[in-house]
Image 1: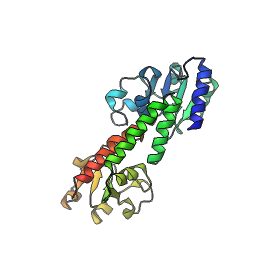
Image 2: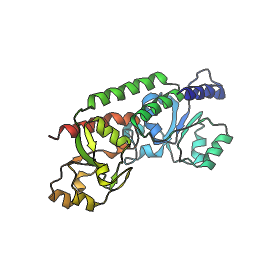
Image 3: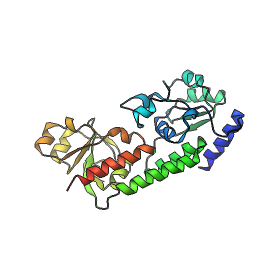
Amino acid sequence: MRSFKVIAALIALWAGAADARPQRIVSMNPCVDAVLLEVADAGQIAAISHWSHDPAGTSAPLEQARRFPAHGGTAEEVIARRPDLLFISPYTPMATREAFRRLGIPMVSMGVPATIADSLAQVRQVADAAGQGVRGEALVRRIEAALVQAHRPQPRPALMRMASGLVPGPGSLSEALMANSGLRSVAADYGFAHAGLLTLEPLALKPPPLLITDRPEAVPPVLKRLRVPVAGFDRRLLNCGGPSLIPAAKQLAAIRDSRP
């Protein structure tokens, strides 16, 4: 976290502004978008990523995200926004980074958090870089309070599998959220050591005690015949951590509470 405070100080010198907070923040990272929308002043945000305007891709409330302009991810579009702070991701091409570097644009790279602790740390890092540390701490407290409220001490076994077949693996943020809300993932029982695709045959041979999926209406007929209990979950809440941990924990706790 200290390094991000240093970055914020350097931004102030680079911009030559009396206010140490960056005034034209651009994000190329949808996970950062969601945090910025919560901690930054509206006037600080020059543009967010196009993913946050996509109903299927955003992890932020769509109505909130669409209040801000979005860019398509090209270097030209980003540079045209004249950012004094730019959030990128590990997937930003090296040539694009180099273009930004040559122009002296301050950059902060953020990945997708793998754990709840990583997610809380990322909130603090984004907020500190934006000069909004107090708001960052307030958001962290909101997330922690939601996790405490959603906590259930007696776990129920369940399998999270998206309609695409994707199963979050052991050690993932998804499994940590499930465990916090009283749901024990059984992904390891199907041989998963990390995220992967689970075909229908293993499910039919070994029906899960509870199936959590993003499209309960699309559950295969064989699972219906086997009377597998099914619960719906908004998969967009798993795209990133940050503020989406709050509704994600609440939804999972509701699923846990709906089961005997």
